[in-house]
Length: 402
Image (cartoon, rainbow, N blue to C red; front, side):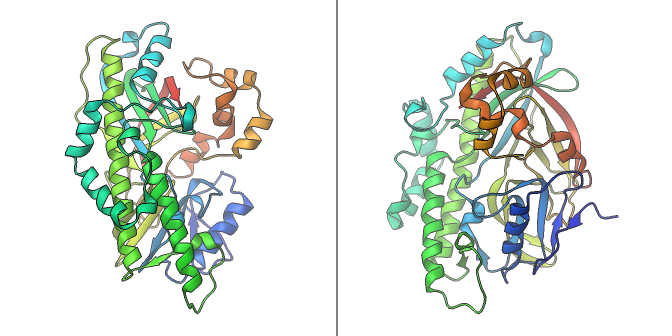
């Protein structure tokens, strides 16, 4: 029996790994809108953390032939996860973890907007940025599209941001210490995303199509167009910047641990995966553009990360290469409600109880990130058992939020 259900009423098939997991009507209608586009290849795949999103549904895989939808990729381009296992065990951690959390917060700037403490960039980070080739590539993009520019690229490299971005210290089933973090391309990727989404909307108004596009956020660029090539270059830069951002943040987080814990070593292979991105891949006998919006590539033998919420379990997984899912798994638990609704429903006491045993923020500023605002991670994992194998189960002991 197939591990997915089909969402009916769409032009192209929608295969959804959602058994035992609720899916809002708004999200289902949004998926049908995407499936109505004539350049969808084969079908759309839906992950169990699916929920309504801006542009396209979070937790969806959209394969396209000859076109890319910028709003489906979104503005948090290249957002993803990184994790590394250390030689430390739980016994190496102090009884009070507030010192560890404070050290990480001092080493990695976090928060958004004027209240975020990310305004000063260490000289070493600026040098690393220039030497990586990212600076030259960015200048070429902005010279052609100056309105896609952000205030500072180096100014947000090695910064966490806010919202659902986090850094965590976790323990696995063998009591080994892991460091895990979640962030993306920050303000630079946001500016690129917003600019090209608007350009795609402008182009849509000029197009003479023989079909209806049901939502202006499904505006697209077509292969062969100059803007298509420019967008691919820009989004590729943002994805590489996001990966570099996670690597530098991880280095600075590990430095904070080295300054406060016994000496330790790292396992050779860190996991570093995007979950908001577009890539050229081959599926069902065709080379296509695959947009994963809140979804992780899970090719056979490929490692990925599926985090829970602040007080829930997280998982290091190994992909099974399921072809119907376009070799994909979920990117997390997925929101069960909006941030506004979470703030209305839950109290600080609710949040404190849900995060008991985790050294983290327990103030009103993170109520929208409380564990109850997310789907049950165990149900999400059960719904995708034919997509991944669980390699490690992690529980958080420290969580840093912006």
